[in-house]
Length: 406
Ligand SMILES: [Fe+2]
Image 1 (cartoon, protein in one colour):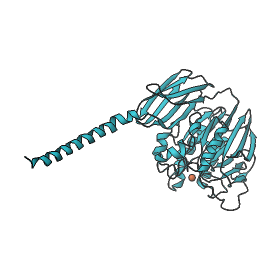
Image 2: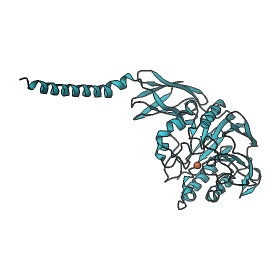
Image 3: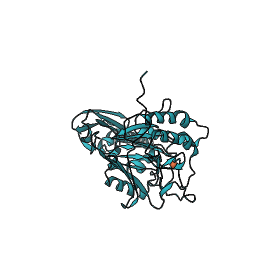
């Protein structure tokens, strides 16, 4: 009888330990998440703004439903895929400020901000273009702060959104965090850089972009949108790094020609990563010169915005590789790749077509349009103006009528 005592004690202790472990697992799985308040860890981010609507994207700590309240009241369609939330807000009055709040289903406000919808009748607008930003550097964060102070209507990115390889896990500190307050109130239009390509599924997961690119290619990598008097054509040039890939010539260039030839917008801009013309670290990109540049010249594109070379460059108006004037159909190319990553040194003496270059300081491009005049400012984080240039709207441009429906 005495010999049985310790054995019963051991089994009893083991049983008690199992019960305690099971209980703690139950608490950890089912109780603790309810004690830690739900919060937003990425976003909200404004996407797909039109005159009468916009979308919001955000990610929460847990896979739990949220709701969105907007003022003025209109249609809100929320949806959720795990921790990722999306809300489509529509039927809003053009040109109005729309206050919104993201809330728990119980009504606790997780985030609140305001989106100003564009107005067709408003003649003045501004936007900021930058690229090669996503390193999480002090310079990236300083530029983000400085850009927000200009209160642009929206942002356009020339690629390399997240270094080193567009990893989803790095979006938090290299994209969402630096631009948090601006993403919540102003649209952000990205393009793909070579560093975003290895994990391109992250780009597709995060952004909600127009699906109006070339037939047969993955959606959202090439797209266009209109903003006020401007048309933007965003192009994926990452295929140029594969010598065998003919996508640019066979699919993207014909599509871009069609989109840029449509009548209507006063101003036309193209946005992509690899610069066809540069006096920077990289050589000129001959394949883009052969495939896309003739399209820009035919259709009278006003400015082509690029990145990839980590510096600022503005070229004189170019046509057929020769410096000319805008009146003679010259296209202006701007490289704005000084958005946060380490700056590059130029390779040698700058080509004659380079009107302005700055590789000494991180910077971004602010475009202001008022009536028929566009003014470009290249600015650093301290508010210094590195370059200033302006032009008036083109009086002639090759356009087609809208294609007939068949
Ligand atoms: Fe790049």
